[in-house]
Length: 239
Image 1 (cartoon, rainbow, N blue to C red):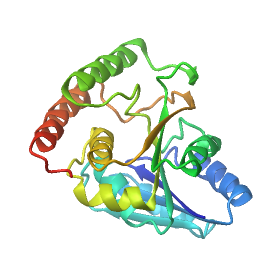
Image 2 (image 1 turned 135 degrees about the vertical axis):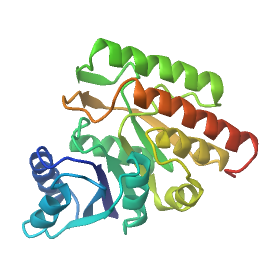
Image 3 (image 1 turned 60 degrees about the horizontal axis):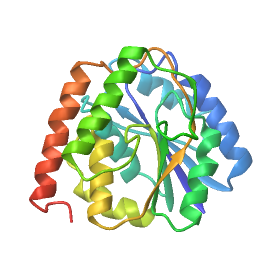
């Protein structure tokens, strides 16, 4: 098995090094073949420079990216397109879901699922540090709206810890259109439209402060993008 770990990054120069070190250490101890890909989304700080410098210390590290900031969905897609592994995981930069949780997702793929998504919404999920109350409520409201607009039954579509086999990436990536935060929803709808098997897996999750998500502006953008996904689904553009 060849594992690719993709991490989207935007203006992360101040907090990128510590989780990166922990992830590299874990992967070196648990996998024979792997790569770590950071996909820079047109950062305005020194994120790209710092990552290139870190490559001297970590030769397994790859750096890809765009000059212009396009959105998390774009960064994840670019990173996954650059991946060489037959299994691809993407994770948020802060690793709010610890890298050790990878074993739970991998277990689902070994049972025959094409995709395994980390979830904070299941009874078995372990939320060690919660988000602020307002942000958590907005997330629940978004999930309720999502389920009313789209044929999707997952308790948590937005956890930034998802794993795909090569069959799934080959189906999903060419059909993606969204660059913003609702890209997770589009991925799952494409997967369902093409009859891929998806497992929702409870994970450990710990909120990290200094989030790049603006709760109101980004929520409105996500609702707009969900309507775009609904349109494309109704028009049978994902199959």
